[in-house]
Image (tube, rainbow, N blue to C red):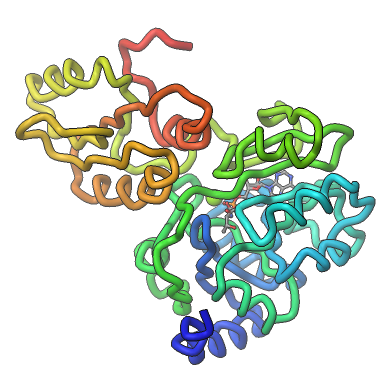
Length: 329
Ligand code: TXA
Ligand code: MG
């Protein structure tokens, strides 16, 4: 771990200086890469929104070096937040809490709440410690596009607009953090992630509700279409995959298939791991690879409909539409 930091010393110094100047940098985390800026600097925040082309009504997550910094950013912090932070930070969990008075509206999209997280990545934590403050960091992709899980993905998204990308290697988890809202009376999961409802309920000692409320707070990850490739993508139940492929090829279409166990002969695509965690780790890179091949359609074989695949199903659902002849709601 020390080696990792020594190897990246020059990049860390440059990234820290850029952040102090109000610039944005590509930040590795264990979930996905972030586009980081000083959470107390309005110009830096405006740059994040402009670079991502993200609408201003989508709040940002503030990344912290450790859990003790919660008190600098939130108020009226419930014991449940301390328990979840102690159990899962550093790690892929974002807590939504009532915001502290000084927090800029650009961070919260004008809401009374703030998203906070301590990422579990040695380079991110080192940068946070050296910077000495909170870093607002949405996923480092153009708004609505597939999140990045390598430094090269960030460069592909933004090119020269983001000259400094700390290269922390491929993200270990590969999908965004679980978001738990603790700003209201009862806990609610707003975005599923690797830390599942059962693990959260166990720490809270109570069941946790799932799903964004229809009004506020706004969660861009809860938009029906998000994390989406440019190629029109469809999710296909396992038992229908062969027939959907056959009719697409029969109609002369070029397709790419993200399959779970095997690809039929002569069909182009990728075979994904048949376990949820490695699947999640590779999902966005796989979508980007197949997207770049410029096919007319992308078909994604749906994983089993079991709880451990919950977060993966969520991301696949947002990257795709159901097949046109699928009469599921
Ligand atoms: O894993 C992650 O969370 C990654 C890495 C970079 O940390 N970040 C990430 O950020 O996914 P972003 O901006 O792509 O997604 C953050 C989500 C958005 O859907 C946003 O609406 C929601 O968090 N969010 C942030 N602050 C919130 C708040 N106060 N209330 C409700 N939702 C909030
Ligand atoms: Mg995002």
